Image 1: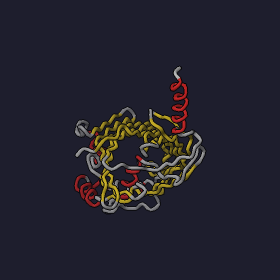
Image 2 (image 1 turned 135 degrees about the vertical axis):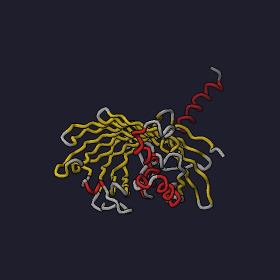
Image 3 (image 1 turned 135 degrees about the horizontal axis):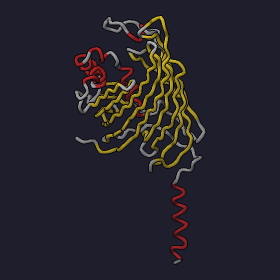
Image 4 (image 1 turned 60 degrees about the horizontal axis):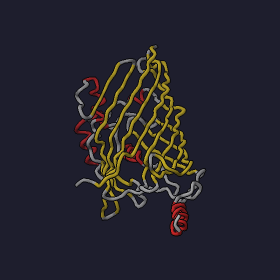
Length: 317
């Protein structure tokens, strides 16, 4: 070995080691949206439930997939995020009765008309979101415009959305809260999400994030974060819909029991964004039997939600 190589090799190794983040070092986890960039996510959901309705045993499975883009621009007051669901596909199998919806060909399955009426409201619509100084959503700037458009296209389906529920949908590509200070593996911090769904009631999610480790995931330097939470729905305030029609959730006295959420989030420490997420959700829905209001029924349900950042690229003009 030449003399220069003899002394240069350990020096390079020491330099590289010094630039690495040790697994037990304290790290900062914070959202960082980059102006001029478009983030492309893929989200999937797999849901299964079994229940008895009118004395008949029923099973239902649903799978869905969505392609979502989030484009960031700089404004005079900070940053703006424009989210758009570019494509959505849903398949439902209820006791071997199959229904399919694909936003690319919404009229392909006539039996999916009720479902396409609601889902079709969101596909292709731009949701413009103002971000605060922590890069968190603070307001939907075009909510009035969206509400008018939803109502004109499908008044019945439009009742499923309000500003609160739409804001929560946008946050699905982010952590529910951030620690606000450097953390080490084993450290935890709470998150508490509450929002109103006009046709379902007040939804509350309360739990904790725990930093498990720091390392390479899918070729990216990530913080691996575990999540553990309880999920509840309060339907006590439901009555009639705003247009005076009956609310079926209220009529059936629907409630959610034993709701839980657990899973893993891989947060890209270089980019400052969620890179990958897997969430296991379990719950039991209790309500009156729609075919006989003198009888009650329970519907255990499990679902797995996955969301992954596919690419980040310059925003196209």
